Amino acid sequence: MTEYIQAGEITAMLQPGMRVFVAGGTNEPLDLIAALRASPDSSSGVVYVQPILPGLNGTDFSSFHSSASMQTFMLSAPLQDGYRKGRIDFLPMQLRAVSDYLSRGARFDLALIQLTDSNRTEHFNAGLNVDVLDAVLGNSKCVVAEINAAMPAPTGSRLVAQDRVQYAVRCNRQLTPYPIAAPTPEAAKIGQLVADLIKDGDCIQTGIGSIPYAVLSALHEKNDLGLHSGIVDDGVMMLAERGVLTGARKVVDTGKMVVCMAIGTQALYQWAATREDLIIKPVTYTHDHSVLSRLDNFVSINSALEVDCLGQVNSEMINGRQIAGTGGAVDFMRGAAASRGGRSIIALTATAARGKISRIVPVLEGFTAATALRTDIDTVVTEYGIAELRYLSSRARGEALIKIAAPQFRDELWGKWQDMKKLL
Image (cartoon, rainbow, N blue to C red; front, side, top):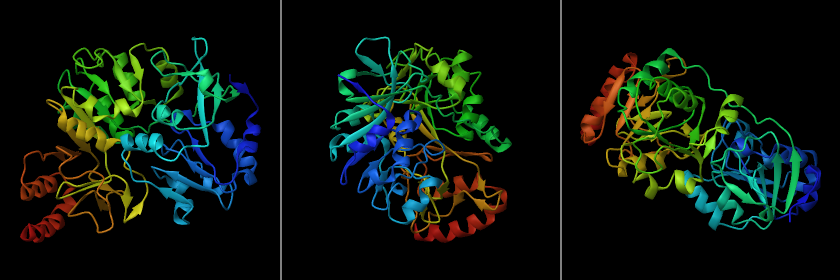
């Protein structure tokens, strides 16, 4: 039986050495976090684990107490100080593997999550994010949930038995929006080039940000597209309202949009609760190879920080410094490779720092990790064109990528590539 408490009462549950999970994404339990922040001594010796979404989740739990620490699978600007000081551990894992880690790793003493009421007796609704919920519920000794009356309750989301939640805190708080910046002219051009690669009936996956939004905006004339992705955002909402995302040709989950999280504006959150064709499932389904491989014509569309002339992709490091994480992109790339008619696309602007830095580079720098291998991607798109890498030789890949680099960097790239080819 769930016992209702005040948010501040959770601080008395903490003890040194405890391992505490905190939900991320749109389901971050902000009232419970505020209670922890207001009682710093309660976090003494506590290890916090949170899968964060940059731009939405930014709490450095290791800052609550000098002996507190944190584990995460994605870094962002608010966590950089704790990471540099060694209080935050970054675990490089693809999202599907994160779920396995949370379900099979050391048991959590406490899990702090956010749910909402449902129309089913003896059940709560998981709301807009169920990414690793099942993994955590199955591996936690005690669960404390914010029951947020303001969180939408999609019919296609997870139900959580009330007897699995030992303690609950009532709240009525609007979810934090995640507005997407309007696409730049460069992003709009990339969006159109990617749209030209999408065929009627394809099943697509996109990431989040201005380039994925630009891609979705350019797909409005397509027909019967399907969606199987990590997120549903405002761009997806726009396409669904236009009748583009019917899912009619999907051989798995026909007629359904399948994601693990909704992220966007307040309008998107309310819209998600009204769509009976929207199914919100855990990453053990959305990011699982055995599911993705059964989706014919599955197209993964993701962005990156840089791509080198070998075709290796870096989506998480700058000058050897970890600024993000692997996320779920590689899960989808490899799913696309196993799909009949599937393909993977990396879309990125050709330059960074207002044109001062090329995102097409000769080779990833020595201490830069390759997020995706050169065998994981099929196509790279910048505002200058499309490089079809699938089936190209090592030498031909470099030449194709240099052709879509910014013109002011091509001569330099070509010279360095000639030296590299001697080694190849």
